Image (tube, rainbow over all chains, first blue to last red):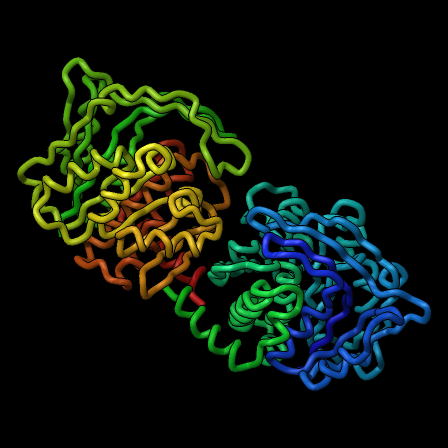
Length: 300
Length: 300
């Protein structure tokens, strides 16, 4: 079934213990689409400046990424992010953010994308995320990402959004903050009461949790022996998850568990190289091989 | 098959966000035995002072804990530990340690225990752990616990021990320290090269990992919504694990995975109450019910 992502395209400057890279292609919509396209076609909506090399988009088309929703802002400059990871690399220290075209982005979903069955609202202002929902017909499953900034500063808009989505994806610290609960299990259950039927909590190297009113599922991370750059791991996880759901054409417990497995496996490719280098090199065969290996690692 | 534990008996004074308890029964051999006895009989070797109420031992007998290896030191006082947990309760701050009879403890394995098939060497000086190995005939599976103190100060003795045991059990920080590797997967694999065929890494609320030359297994923790007191969780995990192995009469991959499931479930009871209150209240039916629930939580 059809899959839509609305998010960012970026150039990232990244420092990790493995080295430093400047102007690496990045952005939530990019990582998401590269991961989701392992499982099937994906539709992308997001803004870039005139400095964005459209040759990249040609490569995506061959992969099944439909960038008809790419908005090239006249005279604009693409979003830039610069960050550093140290120690166990569980969190990035943001050194610099240049919003550029992202600062004034008002998503416009192309008419051809309005019938999308699966929708991922990558992290941005919750009102901007909500504006996408009024531009799609009757999506079967909507998953939203968010971050500490909106939890702290835009709680009313975020709570409005949570009543309109099927699932919320966030990391453990954000889940604790949103719920006001120190215990992560209690936090996940509290967030269900805010609206979403499913809550997926990402714990980085410690895996992920799925909460619903009737079910709980815990999945470890893939045992990565060398993490070069964690940038984009969360959006890659989301892309593998939603790509798998769209391929299944379902969002029940079984499909969500399968999706988390696929999301974990695709994210494991992302962290092995700088930027999108890891996930861009993955085809269905590589993803499938690691998926089978990972299933062995986590099957009781 | 028969199961032996050599470890400590203690009175603990514990502060957690849930409250404070003085002179709670504790010690590695106690938590271990209470957990292992859910699965079958267990033999206990450890020292106490004259202040230890032997009525406790009567209760254990009914549970299948054979305390024939209890050494009551004349004029001695039982080991005391005092600690505090704060925040996410992932680590205890030790406030006070009174070694008492533990300081001069030289384990003597009773003749009737020499044929033990499964042996758990609870955390103590590695030379003391090694001295147990020369007092048992030909155990089928020996698992040792250790801690940062011995890794830092008694590395040669610890390395000697590691060449003589089948498995090593330690937490994530200790694994990184022992291996000199920041990445936990790399650390687990490096420790295999020091001798043990199996390495089990405990990650507290983040679950546990099993490493061998040919296999890897990752298991999340039980989703405890309320953690009252984490004291003894690691030794309870070891008790459930070894109790399950002894019941299986095997220590192959399947039995070790099953053992980790049982260890996780028994540990989840321990953290729900202060001291041994949680695990002491568990019978086979309660453990079995939660085991089935947990299997659902972690089955892909």
